[in-house]
Structures are given as structure tokens and as C-alpha cells.
Image (tube, rainbow, N blue to C red; front, side):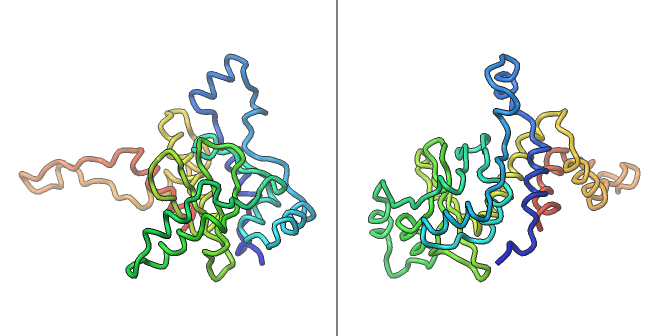
Length: 243
């Protein structure tokens, strides 16, 4: 099963091409501590044999969006998040609930528990762990939480946060959200301009009406306040890119 025609190669190349270092990374580059090659996001693609070997080792076929991702980039760097690195096909493995989260979550279930709460309680023992480097955080695909396309839900658990895991309906949805967040964070840099920001600005100009001129307002009306640039551009990215 394919990923509904989603072009991982184009998506990931665009993300890599648009990437610019954060302020901390720019300092490391200037000081010679790292090179641009060290900060590359992408990895060489996995082969069909690499993915098949991983599936034999794990005893299951991987969900379509994650499988398609590996065939485009066998791992990915996410330095702007608590998940720093997604591993290659040979590095992923079953999580196995090493911290004993399952009993704690199951004890909280009662007759009013929702289906999602039941799924979450069982996720820890079923999940496939994807990250190889993180800030006490875990990227977990759950084969027990699936949809009609064969996708597995992805949970991100930040062990230091004291919060419930964040759920994404698929690996693809998680990566799209990370791309969106990358743009929202970099948009704070005034020099951050690329094809995505230009397209987004053009879309905003087409769909966001200009406020009326003061001369067109009834006497005594408050002067309208223009929407700040960052709210328009960052807020529209998810709609224009992914829906």
C-alpha cells in the first residue's frame, strides 16, 4: 500500500533546502565547532531490502507513511524539537515499556474510559520506538491504534513534562507538523524568506481583505488594526500546505 500518492522525496528535499541554522547553530558554525554537513537533516534513502530486513526483524509490515519516509530518507534530524534524531531502519525497535507506564495508565481506567484512553494505556507495551537521540523524549508508533489506510498513530512522550503524550494520526502527520513548526520558529528571523514563505504571503494577500480606509468608516468607528505579519503567515501555513 502506498502513502496515498504523497511524495516524500519532494517534501523532504524542500524541507532540507529551506532549512537555515538556528541562532545557536549559527554560532557553532561561526566558531568552527560544526560544519553544514554535520547539520544536514536528511540521510541517504533506505533500500527496499533495508526496509524488508527491518520488517522481518520486527515481525510486522511498517505503516505506509513511515515506510515511504524510510525509502526517501533513512532517518532524519529534528534538532528544533525534544526529539533530536529519528533512527534508520536498522536502528528502530520495540519500546517494551521500560519504565512500567502500562500499569499506571490502566489503573486510571474505569467504566467511563474512552476508547482513546484505553488505546493509550496499552500503547506502551505495543509501541515501536523511532528516535535514537532526544531530550528524555520518545517517538512511538502504535500498531494497535490504526486507521483504514493502515497507518499507525504516533505518540510523542516528553518524559520531563509531566504531560500526556501528544498523538498524531500517522507518521506523516507528525512530520508535517514538525515542518510547520520549523517555519513558525524561523519566521521570527526577518531574513527568513523562501519559496514557501513567498507562496504563503501570496495566498494571504489573495484571501485576506484589506481593512477599510478610515474615510470609509462611519463617524465614530474605531480604526481597524491590521493583522500582524507573523499571525497571518504562520497561522496560514497548515491550511495552505497540508489541507
